Length: 188
Image 1 (cartoon, one colour):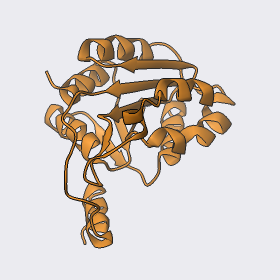
Image 2 (image 1 turned 135 degrees about the horizontal axis):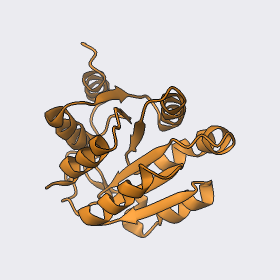
Image 3 (image 1 turned 90 degrees about the vertical axis):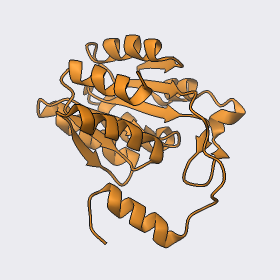
């Protein structure tokens, strides 16, 4: 079973309904698996910190959601996490960061984790109360089983061994706009 299939199967097991995400090629694989399995609502976001508020609202409203982030998403979410979820002890945010150590949009440039940045340590320092770094599907299943029954916030850093993207270079601003519009379901 692939990463995306495993993640959505575990999320469905715990009645997670909302997959909140900033459009990213790695996350698209998970969304495709969710569409195939059914029972999820995918909510595109413009920024990761927006996702913290959305997931907190979903939790307060009695629904279950997760925030799916590309590697860079952790830094963008820190202020919202500290000022909302941690301060008010909202037990909801489950942040899943997909990381294959390369940026897909810019042709495979290495991410900070390619140079040994420890996102799990960064997350702990930022105030995430429960942090897991996983490198296998079995490790993800164990971490998700805990994250979906214990109060959070949780941060799960998935270090995937997928082949990094190569070549391509930075797309034009128009191409980026069209890709984003497609991801949120808007017609251009």
